[in-house]
Image (cartoon, rainbow, N blue to C red; front, side, top):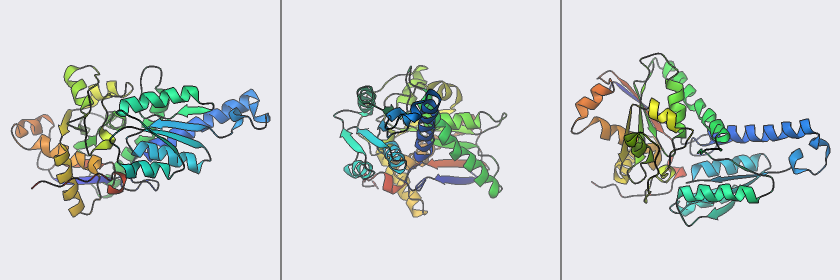
Length: 328
């Protein structure tokens, strides 16, 4: 590779991950829509009416970063938050969500189960709204707003690369959970003329739902395991993201916790405080572009010695307290 850049998301709007970009925009759109509806229906004249702008409960499920971002927005805007946390999330990450004055429910199950319980809670809670970063049939508008918020990250990359005369990237590595960030990447780069960046999705090998779906050319749910890359520990691709991922990704790969840990250590040595999810991008590029068959894969991705690589480091070390010894 000619040049390697890291998009460092270890501090975004005061939080140690990129998720605040999507959560802030989705919460803003949700509250603005409710206020507009109340004004147009005359509810604003009814003192104390929840519909007239009283506090609402923002409900979500999370592997850590998204839930904390929703809880932070709720606190800043005088709303309530209820966050469902699946098994495997580090206690410190759960405590960080609670510190945002959110109600936290720990779920005896995986991420998909936490999402189901969050959706059920909205139906049973007055003045509650689901702010979820994955979509399914009948629930796609708010996840779409979250993807819109993520677009800021890619606009920034364009500006930052232009500032150092780097031009457009040849390869962008994207850590993937349900696929919403990758959807934003596809939307951004596929709006360009031919010759735009190749896109590589990277998942934990214990939760590679997107890779499995691409292999079968249909969305599938995989059984997830335990991983230090907790923010990527999702078994079902977002239905909103899936067509973009199917048609827009150039390659997909799964990496181990050990791969991610080594990458995090190497990034730390260069001054980048990357958590396991963020370091997955470097781990994925290494796995894709080295070893048996690497030359063919480089050719397929149109990469050469002068190519520019962008790694999305989607979280800092403070976002994910999981630690793992780095094997020699």
